[in-house]
Amino acid sequence: MPEPASKPVAPSRRKAGRHRGEGQWAAGHFTPLNPNEQFKKDDDGLNVRTRIETVYSKRGFQSIDPQDLRGRMRWWGLYTQRKPGIDGGKTAILAPEELDDEYFMLRVRIDGGRLTTQQLRVIGEISQEFARGTADVTDRQNVQYHWIRIEDVPEIWRRLEAVGLSTTEACGDTPRVVVGSPVAGIAADEIIDGTPAIEEIHRRVIGNKAYSNLPRKFKTAVSGSPLLDVAHEINDVAFVGVRHPELGPGFDVWVGGGLSTNPKIGVRLGAWVPADEVADVHEGIVGLFRDYGYRRLRTRARIKFLVADWGPEKFRQVLEDEYLLRRMADGPAPEAPVHHWRDHVGVHRQRDGRYYVGFAPRVGRVDGTTLTKIADLAEAHGSQRVHTTVQQKMIILDVPEDRVTALTEGLAALDLAVEPSAFRRGTMACTGIEFCKLAIVETKGRGSWLIDELERRLPGFDEPVTININGCPNSCARIQVADIGLKGQLVTDDAGNQVEGYQVHLGGSLGLEPGFGRKVRGLKVTAAGLADYVERVLRAYQEQREPGERFAQWAARADAESLS
Image (tube, rainbow, N blue to C red; front, side, top):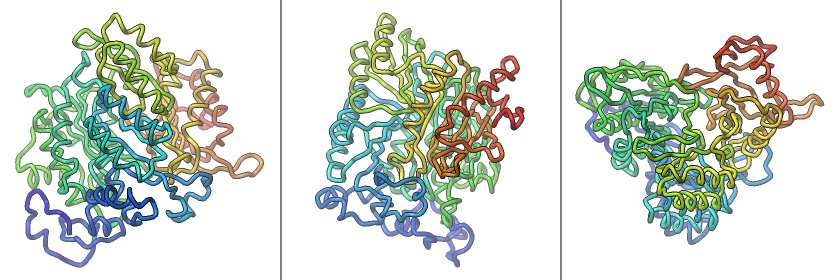
């Protein structure tokens, strides 16, 4: 039986009935309608930690109950990784137990992207000792390890939690990491600091069994930056900094964004929320999703489908009437950002006169040794804080002016570019077939190779362009909202062989004019021909663009020949 709601639900909606509709709890439909709903009803995912600590870590991988292995362990950030040597053609064919390796991906949640140098050093040390050096920075500000043994998980938790980090609900049908502006509280142009709201959301919701059984994952973003630096349009709920003409700085509320195979841009509720009420509104929306979210089909269980069916007006009405028990103030929309780049890369002056220095790892791929060196470098130049961004970048904060040059030189020695090329700055990649059981093609290594190729072929290219590479259709690397989005799939080459390749999406964007890229009919490129294709389409853009025209604008009007 699910945990009771945080407030009573009207008896008329609690009345049990036959299993119909979308399996909403608010309609009295508590009988599980799919295996995921069944295992969540059988035992809350948070409870698996005790079994990991007392049974599985002592008896080994073979002792793990299958429903824990492929279900509840996600509530603590653990996924089995892909068994080596299985090609992409078998991804959708093999049973889960055939794809599973006896090692895990473990995700460390980093709410707001905020780390101390001490925390970063511990993350790096864990990577070196337990994860074969792996430690990727994700596009949700987390760090992901691979090659984790179940026997080592309790010790990893002990070390993380000793410095205030955790893996709690980093995965699963839960409130995932709350992304936030990595320069909150220090940026000279900030509208409002979202850090207290993120901390209060975390305190109320994370690890709370009232919200640990949601229909699907739930992604939150909070930022008061005018750069719109958290991809708010594609989160389940987002709070975006705005200035109300009468009420002052606060947050505009967005709901229903998300990508994957049914992408949707979030919609505004038209509501303005003061900073000290963000956690109230967030908790109300999480509760609404828990009670009204669709639980019949996993493919329709994200909140974006509920929002699409209800519309923002009904969603706001139910939120106010049944969860907040009060009206929210109407408010303005965010202003369009003036910059295309929203990753904070480069050297920037803080409001206190010190500087923050943003730098670009290659497609988010770093390692434990590099992370410990970054922590050492930051401390050697007067900083105690290193933050992550939603573009797989990192930032060292609070650097005295007279230490900036030495710091940038130290980062360059680690191949961490403070002034990267457009390709180094704009290319992101998901985990890919190296470790992910859903992937069809390679991504990280290919993304790094593509950066090198484009820098060599187009050395003078300096226009802001995003190239996002995904190993499957699920869009963890946000392919639909990239200038050039590459969705991994198997394609046929000129010799008739089935090889790794990509379906191409062109002209997606967030921020200035949010929208999804167009698919050119029949356009698929092989992995081997990827650099040739991207070079060709970027040269066409350079030749045909109007003054000041961004790639997404050009791609929307260009003919098929120019895009092929």
